[in-house]
Length: 206
Image (cartoon, rainbow, N blue to C red):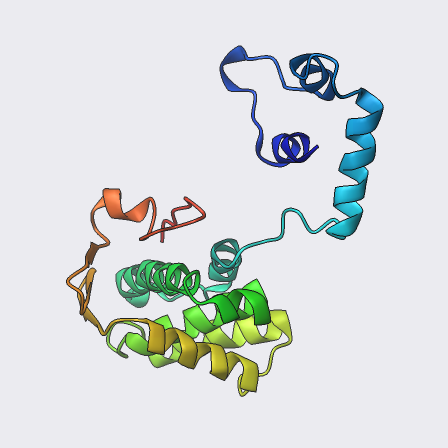
């Protein structure tokens, strides 16, 4: 039943392969399990989990939040495009670090971790790379869309946990360095496909 649930959520039928169905699993079990028993067990598992089998993760939420990045004037074009990409990559870096902090996964929503990651990323970028007006507009758009208060204690707490978990970050143009020596060159497409330990595999083009 667990295999069937996993197939329904993550399975794909590329390359002309036949889809794996409940009847396939019955056949593979050599008759030990019936269609009815697998369906009953599947239903029991789903009800026990309250159907929470494919919740959004923070990396996905960040991608959606980035759609709220404001349109910018032509003279900001290159500056803001670079800042937008840098915010996205830094945010994903924070999110990937959050996977190692159990209390973030247990006590906080994915959207809270995503927003805190973005706020930390924005804080790291100076006003030359990210003009104050654009910075303020971007965060305001997110707060308005989520109905979260900027002074939220929960957001502040997650921001601090992420900062404590993160090595010191130094930004140099399109590159950021961490204290442990990790270098992320955002101009290199090989680094834009996934961030360290990325769980989404998603890239963002500014």
